[in-house]
Length: 353
Image 1: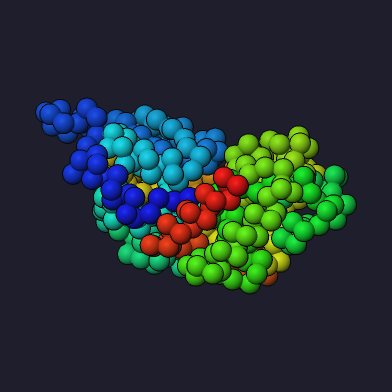
Image 2 (image 1 turned 60 degrees about the horizontal axis):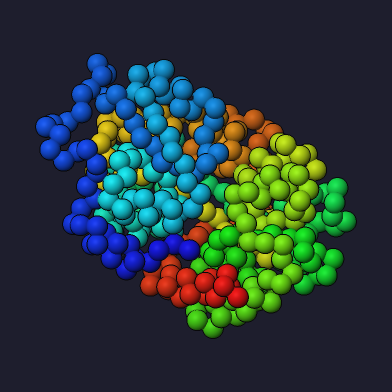
C-alpha cells in the first residue's frame, strides 16, 4: 500500500529538513558540463521491464550522457528510497496516486517546463490529471490497467469476471496481485463500488470478500507471476495488461481481459527527484522520451499505453490496447488522502489472516 501523507512527511522530518544527496554537500560547485550543456551523467530509478532496448543507448549516443538505471518493484520501495534522504537519483517513475504525497513531502522537484521539448505531443486525456494538475512535478510516462490473465490451453472457459473467485473450478488456480490497491479495488468493483472508495463500510465489505476468497487462492504475487503464468505454474492471475502481454510473447496461450465489473486505469509519471544532481540531463531525457518514435518504441516493448498522441499514431497494429468498451469500464486510480490509513489497515488484515 502507498504510504500516507502523514507517514511520508514524518519520514521526511526524521531524515532531516531536506533530502540531501550523498556527495553533494561541500562538493565545491556544480558538476562539469558536456559541450552541449548537459551534465555527463544521469541516474534513473524506474520500474523493471519498463524501457525499450534502445531507449537508453539511443539517448547516450545522441547526448554523450552516461545513464545509470536502477529498478524497483513497488511505489513503497520508491518512496522509501526517496525519503531516506540519500537516493542520488535524477528521475523517478511514481504512479499517479502517490505523486501528491511525494510532492507534499518534498521528495519531488519542480520541473522547468520551458526546458521540456515535445510536451505538445501529450494526448488531451493525459493533461491536467488530478495527481498533478499543472504538471509542476511530472510528465506522463505510460498508462495501463489491470485485469485477468489466463492460460487458454489450461482453463476451460474465459474467466472475465471476479465471480471466478466463487467458482470451485478455479480454486487454488488463481493468484491476485500483492498490492492492496489492486485487490481491494477489485473487490469494490465487484460490488459496483468505486475503486477509490473511502467509505468505511464499503471497505470493510471489500476486506471481508478478499478474506473469504483467500483460502481458495494460490497466492498474492506481483512481479514473478509473469514467468509462473508462462510456465503453467499459475493458470489464472490478476495482472497488469502490459505484463500479461509480455508473458504472452513467451507463451502465446496466455489471454487477457478486463473484468466485466471494471478495473482501474493507472498512469505512471516521470518526475524529477528533489536535489537531482543532473537537472539539465534530466530535462533533456524527458524531452527525448516525448519524441514520437521513442515513446512508440517503449510502448511496443512494454505493451503498455503511451500518453503520447504522436507516438500512438505510429505504433504497430500488433500492440494491444483496451477496446472502447473496456475503456468505458475503467476508472482512474486516485490519491486516497487520509483514507490511505484505512486502506492500509484493511490490506494488513487481509495479508496477515
